[in-house]
Length: 81
Image 1 (cartoon, one colour):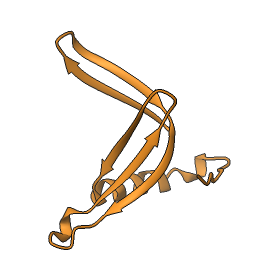
Image 2: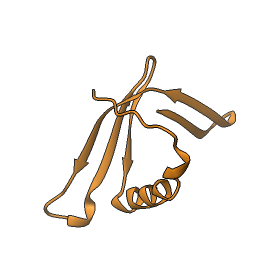
Image 3: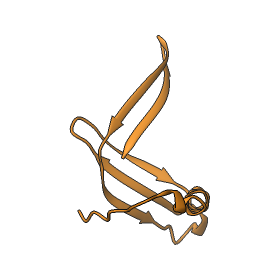
């Protein structure tokens, strides 16, 4: 997985780029607030790590976008961690 980020600091806009493997996918549900669920993608690279939190609506949009373009993918490999 590759992550590219634009961040503002005192020097202006800085672009950060890192890569790593997805280690875990966590689905968090809150019984008190049913609309407060989130999907977390936990990744770790050689010099970096992080968590990307997505809402269910963002995941639905991602799945919709990717599924319409699956015919462009020639091959797929499933990696177990």
